[in-house]
Image (tube, rainbow, N blue to C red; front, top):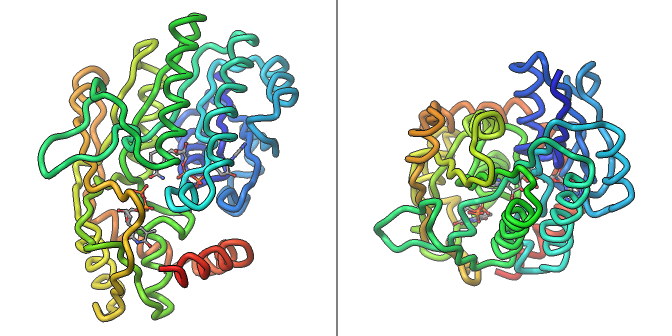
Length: 337
Ligand code: NAD
Ligand code: TYD
């Protein structure tokens, strides 16, 4: 039996990872540590919350006493750290909590993992730590880090700490750097669910700048399979890029969403650009493909149709998560553009 700690397991990727592990790894028990911030929601764990191999703990990865106690008591084979503040626009409005959770929280987890003798620490990072590309080229694992937003700077800080814990103290660590995820249970502040949510309500679809920024899109389940592959088979101290081989401009993605929903392109509203907006991300996934045999399986256009269908079928979930705090935040953001 493998005893695993997943942090941030009530969020978008973490919730999908918990479901994936419970469904595909009968030997794995998951303890799920999550603070339940605005983007963490127990509704994301519907159907698996009471699973006999899943234990939910509400708490902050930066709470040193809680984290040390949990790691000492449970003797984890591994920690997969997904807990984070994850949205670039929010980091531009208020960076402090990004540093607290993404940098300090990761340091608390690393120290506790070393102290408790955890077998392996997987840090879930992002391609955004590499910065921004021009029209050519791809990020490789040895591309120098050049983060541009407070979000990506905090993730890069965490990556450096993880590598320091490996180099200095010998903790067995691996880092994954993945491109933009899409799929079910994503909080509708991120582009794809935001556009689906607005389009279904015939609200404007706010496209930043000229809409020609490029992201590489990956289905969240391809990412989860990649995380587990790296956790089980990656080399200690190594970094692995994960990507979807699906580069699209934002306008291309928005137009496809409108087409799937049968809504008019007149809903597209060009708004002021995001400050410091990274132009293009593209990932070289040669290392994980060659060394660990992982490749993305989802076709983007097909995955997007399935994803739009999922949100259509989960309108109650959308209504629930966009109420309260998020609605106020989004209105302010939108009015300021
Ligand atoms: P999310 O915002 O949907 O989920 C984050 C989760 O972390 C939430 O459940 C939240 O409650 C929890 N959390 C936040 N602060 C916490 C704290 N201090 N202690 C405990 N829990 C806390 O984000 P996501 O999109 O699922 O991203 C998960 C991870 O994957 C993040 O580390 C992010 O940087 C990384 N990542 C995301 C993407 C993407 O496209 N979404 C791509 C690459 C990497
Ligand atoms: P986002 O989903 O926030 O992910 P990230 O900034 O981490 O890549 O944004 C994806 C792209 O979509 C990015 O280029 C910004 C753009 N975008 C919009 O044009 N409008 C929006 O309302 C949002 C949220 C994003």
